Image (cartoon, rainbow, N blue to C red; front, side):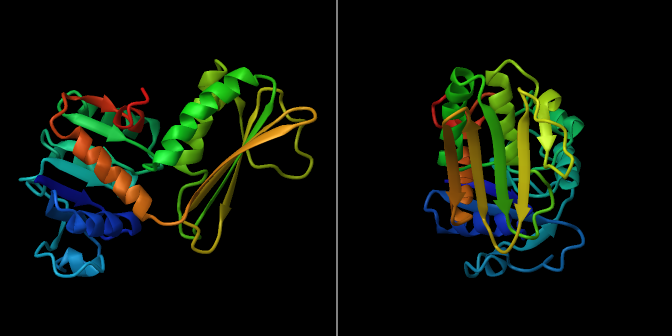
Length: 264
């Protein structure tokens, strides 16, 4: 059995991770951590997740809150992850928190000196494979225009999505570019002409969309589109738990979903 703690346990993704953990025969939920302002503090996390009584109550982030865990699965907010870093105390961490600043990302990666860590904006196998496909497509079709369109539910805070940004970095790197130098964030009227090496990003926030990402590579006379549509958050939760199983027992370091799937 692998002992797991969940940070952000009462959020959209956190609840799904809790439910999938409780349903798994090889995982043991030992802690569920939520924001100190959460109305769910003290409640049974299994009931909050709609998965039945678990015997684990939701607690606030505090010293010792991750004791007994072999791995933490984190789907919280950037500030919460930053505050949790000093409290992980050598425990492996899988994080799906998006919207991190460069400083916060570096701090998380630096924790990899003490323990194995994995940060991913998307834990689906399909998106992980799409990165590999895009590397080859972007490098081969080096003069094709690239546009990335993503859609998520109305309550998602960060925009563009972490997955869209990650896909953009993959494309830019394949062409020997820096994403920050070539990115365009949406378009308005009187928008300047499209730069030849530009990567366009467009975001939709509507309804209860779980997550969609569409990448266009358009040349003269033809275009190629790659699409990934997530129909349930359970695919992300199962992917995060797959990563957690893989990470336990690894040497300290900074890992990726490509490592988990054997694509690196």
